[in-house]
Amino acid sequence: MLAKRIIPCLDVHHGVVVKGVSFKQLQTAGDPVDLAARYVDEGADELALLDISASVEGRETFIDVVKRVASEINVPFTVGGGVRGAEDAYRILANGADKVAVNTAAIQNTSIVTKISERFGAQCTVLAIDAKRESGPHGPWYQVYSHSATRPTGLDAVKWAVKGEELGAGEILLTSIDQDGRRTGYDVDLLRRISSAVSIPVIASGGAGELRHFLEAIKEGGADAVLAASVFHYKIFTIGQVKEYLKSHGVEVRL
Image (cartoon, one colour):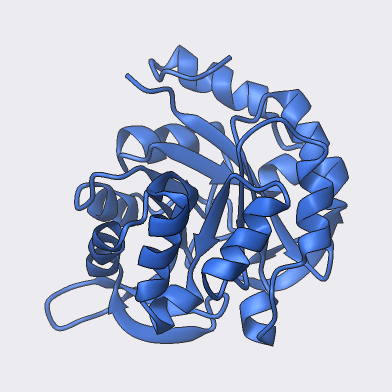
């Protein structure tokens, strides 16, 4: 059985780590380099850095921040935000990232996922999905949003995840817009729907507030990895505490 991964996330806005609620009410959380170094020391399996304003502002990712963070860590490093094609992906990977997450650009042009995957490998290609629960005539469904969760796309999240795998994505970073920053738990229903529809790893994002939430995402939602931000930024608990808790409940982790 593969070990489940714990991934701290650095949401970067103009070079500073921020955290909000459902992608709004942003508050400063610290320096990305300092936080990254701390999380590696605490035992993070991977790190994620998301430039959350790049797609909205129509610009490329802050490469200098990527470079500074990469120089301080020795764990796999995923970068997303403002990736508009294979050249942007190359620039990010060349400056120290191990994986590239693509969201808005993939929705606008699905061939981008395939081009990145063919050029750099599926293992480097992450499809980021921001999804929100909606009411429908046949029951609740999850709609994909673009541009940092500001624009509804009409896409069904489950169908989009399946399509992403077909296009060449090697992993899905799945964020619940409803749960983001609320610390009330991951959206287990959303996770279950996506993880059961694809064969590639799914990273749970949005909602961690208690240790049991990580366990629920894995055991009930089928997540292969759990990502969190504010609970680590504000030292509600450490990565080591999460791993010890999961191990005590029968989950394989790297200690």
